[in-house]
Image (cartoon, rainbow, N blue to C red; front, side, top):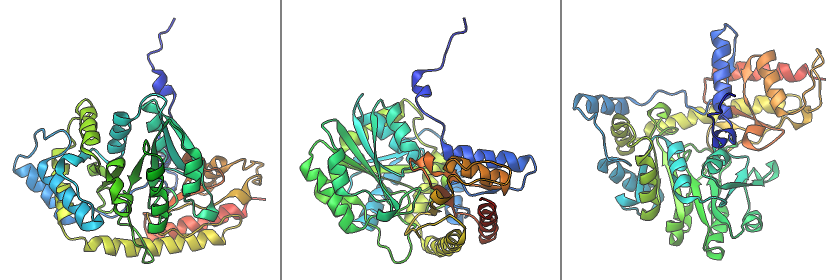
Length: 402
């Protein structure tokens, strides 16, 4: 009898769907197929020169050894200054954790705080990794449905109904992946009042897209809006998106020192420290000028408007224009049940996305991956030329359905 070495833990989760779509697009390109990939959550801008120079200098100065497990002191100090400067939140360095990307920071936090059976409330649509990370931590993801009518934002009333004595965390992601929706100060204040009513509950505020906002939207984070509950809020951020540093893998969090200490213990038994070189690059990012972010945002806004307008002209598709991030989340619900000339039935959003990549060579991510059927995600972090071509192809694909 063949022995099964694979754990039940691995069998209880799924691979990242966004990475799977990106990988499939690359494979098809390598095989010679003309594919436009709109699946990756990654800016197409290069890392700014001053950040790259800081990394080169770190290498030349021999800063290539192990560092403190959860971040060099200089970077932690820069993160404290960032929180104070941008968010008016005061943290000490022992309340800061640095990890190998925002994903690892969240992973560490959940492993460090969630016990078996603890519940973590996650509004849907959600970033694909939230529920699986909770499952790995032996917690229970509690999914709350939101809709396009509320711009995919959860209400305090919905949260109150979902909270039980087992609730450990609520996850709020603003600007959102996959929808680009952003919570206003008033909406965050309503959510924050829950911490007054339920003293056993904390909130994870995932702010990774903080600096990518449009149309004069003013970003606020939860710990700014309700500072009295700062110790019950885990504020997560990083340099991947705004600074075009996805591959450098640096994320960070601010929280109570007990949580941060526990996260460091988890990290000490996995990666140990994040890359020393990447940490010095991130230090330069947080201390340097940020004019390039404003320039990039103008480009992103133009792309958002371009692809949103095309999608809203496509038969059976509709989309809200988001206030942040670099995604749109169109509805394809009107096309469910339609057929191709070859007899393929578009049974759901997954089949629709498979149809797009096979029929017209456009790779997008089905909404089911984000816990929302009848939708799909498009990343507009690519060139105007490719977005225009992808939009034309999607329009052609929709017109072929009957």
